[in-house]
Image 1 (cartoon, rainbow, N blue to C red):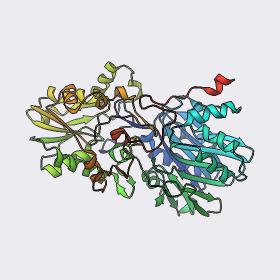
Image 2: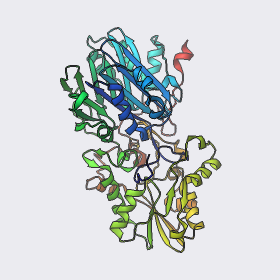
Image 3: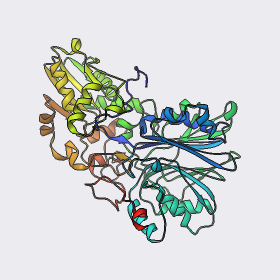
Image 4: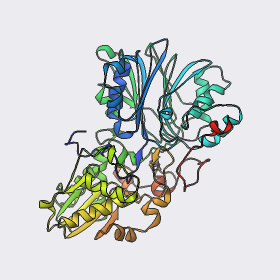
Length: 497
Ligand code: SF4
């Protein structure tokens, strides 16, 4: 990440005090060096998962897989690595995960030799009834290789009685609840699909140049299309399944009808890169508009507006432009804080904030400031940053947050602490203000957030987005889970053995 990339959130959340997208997926078919294209695409999606990366390729006869812990560049930057992945079709995955835990066996794409041929799958999202499905499959004799929820889909496809691979896949997905954007490779080509509510994003592009002429690309975000030189074609629609053959023919299927979609509104607030286009809107513009809504709803008598870098920057620009209070860089973020510094205890987390952020003392001293951040999760980062501003001489610190209070856990592929650890689940806004030691604290309203994405407000009977972490209104059943727990799959396959 370059030092001038304001608006991007840091690759590493060293504080455990941000919600984290768990995965990014990328796939290409019809490109001569498909794995190299995939590595480049995954690099653009690195912010969606830093724990591990994997690529599977197909050369027309065989499937090849390389997976590793760490960043894409650590695993896929050498000629030797790419030589292990020949073929014109490849799919890749970056992950940060709680479901299934860490470990190479959970790194995707997952692959299986089925009776009908090879089956590789890369998944962004979370199957919220995976535990229930897994227990059922284990009772019937399935032996799981990983603890990933995604492996459930492979077993459901393997045991389906439908004759074609596509029908088996659809049959499997009918049993699955939750969020999934999937890229699947078989001996016949690539299939990309999105769950019926379209909770997690997936876009389609096309490369029509050089060695990649006629290649079809799928990716979690449009930034991955940009980096590989692909033109944006369209979003994979919620509930749509797109099949692409090696001759380049593309077929769209809608096996789940056309239910009302509920894409994740947090993609606009934080997860997606600001240079992505999501739901037809520039993520950067939406973030600025959230800041403008905040300024309208919660003005502050202040001298300067300061973003908490980097993810608070677009909202702070919007707040400053709407309010007329000057935008200034009052906090400078180190871009060299790495994973080495992540420590599990609350005390050490607080220390890592200081390693990552430093006050621009010459600017802040003697000023009344408005601090803009994208969210408050546990509150430890906000507390430390408010303290840092006071120590640098700020006379007043007014905190403004570019999302409503995060009160509920996410079960759709975003890493959230259990509900009891969410500050907003334990305290009202005044108690939160006291906790972070700010002079005032305000969050954008849920209607303000909807206005920023172009709606009139939130329609409670038919909300256009998933906003469950703010409202508790989960758009699917949560068969396996209670709101209080973060999903953790037991090793049912191992217990049964
Ligand atoms: Fe996104 Fe929140 Fe819904 Fe999870 S619960 S999908 S983070 S809006």
